[in-house]
Image (cartoon, rainbow, N blue to C red; front, side):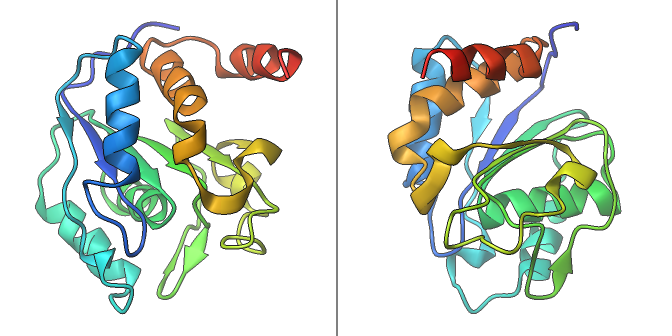
Length: 181
């Protein structure tokens, strides 16, 4: 695979989160791993848990992300990014971390190119809403992502995201990560 030259990397927080939380920690770890990209961490409407996911999808669309950008979303941020990709932005690359395939008024319906999902089906926050990931994305059910706490796994996540950005084989990387357990 060829290395991708992303014009920007958008990091989207989960429901009730903020740009200063887990996505900021992930950005810091990605920089430590050598990823010196234009990182953007917008404050999403779903920082208020009462806001429906579709409002955040519309908001993300209004940001006019550059063509071919990478969008990494944690939990609700991943669902929102994947839905925008599905509706109108097939040029985007999307990585969903511990994201559901549906929530509220938003449901993913089709598989897309350049969509990667890293999740734990046993995570109590998203349990029962991850079964369709293998039909919707290149998907990895990772038991170590349980607990819905990505902060303690930021190093491994940064390595996986970095490998994706460099166009490396994610299946081979996952196999080597499993062997090092």
